[in-house]
Image (cartoon, rainbow, N blue to C red; front, side, top):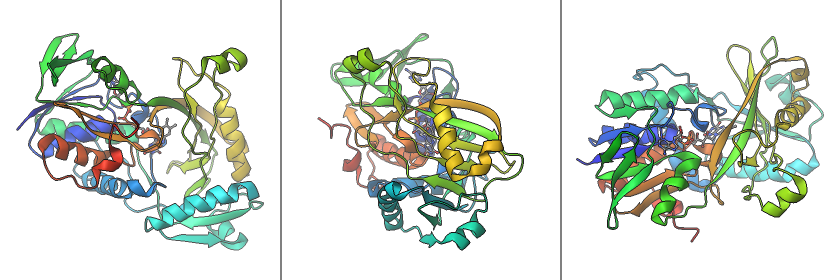
Length: 384
Ligand SMILES: Cc1cc2nc3c(=O)[nH]c(=O)nc-3n(C[C@H](O)[C@H](O)[C@H](O)COP(=O)(O)OP(=O)(O)OC[C@H]3O[C@@H](n4cnc5c(N)ncnc54)[C@H](O)[C@@H]3O)c2cc1C
């Protein structure tokens, strides 16, 4: 069985370590910081059905794996054993088209969608505004703790002898002619039969010295956590997210108007069992270590209060952001890019939703086994 170095201790790297060790490979996972220190520990913690039909198989396999390990995990993590359900709303006529497209895609994935009239909406979610254009109930949506899930997957790998290294960067990939043979760290070289780069938005930095260019942009997204004092919602409550790839910023635009503003706001209210709620999210191209657009939480709250007015009285608890690794078509890049080198990144807003399914595909590529689903959809070179 091969020795595999996995670079990145986010949900993708941890899931790969779990799956590879399940299939008998020996794994060393390198995380330059702590496990889940990137977006994997800073996201909204939702498994909701993907809108892209190409992702249905990978997403459902991921959910199945998370539910499977919930009981055996060395680190307990929170996940709804059954769907909590989602109340999906269109605020005004302008939102209706986007909402209907989203719902059509979700129902094509086999999830029941029911339109709610004023009375059934009031019954399902008393705190949701009544003056909305339309509302639906989607029989889907699991809440989970994404940081704990990431650590749990890494610990499961460790229980099968994987070596998990924290605070150790892969500085560069080692090569022998056209083959990748390991990584270089501050502690020296680590040889590997295969390297899996799952370093989120930082993946291109490792690949570019080998002439491998992947169009992955870091896209900053904000979240806000509030305490409304008493439970706010029984289900997830959401609007259609402003989709569409975020373009890389142009120097001339920044010269004219400053650093990029957040855009593509969508409201998702994630109600916690303790009565608090997590609200997201926004999109903006990542350029600087500190937020380019610190006004994002204000806009997030404005939008969320529009659909759940009682949020206006909630106590503000905290706000933070994470960086999504985003491709132009918002599908991940998963595949072999050199002998000895596999990439798994670019999961955009759905890295948790698609994490364990990604790991199944990675393991099949590394071990030369039959892929669990059509891998051409995720071809890293499809943008060439
Ligand atoms: C606001 C927000 C809300 C979101 N909500 C959801 C949601 O509800 N559901 C969902 O599915 N997705 C959600 N996402 C998206 C999800 O968080 C990401 O798709 C996912 O976390 C990406 O995981 P990753 O492992 O690829 O990257 P990361 O989590 O970024 O992990 C990469 C890791 O690699 C490490 N690293 C980088 N370079 C090196 C190196 N050279 N050597 C060693 N280590 C290195 C980093 O430190 C990092 O820990 C959200 C994202 C944001 C920002």
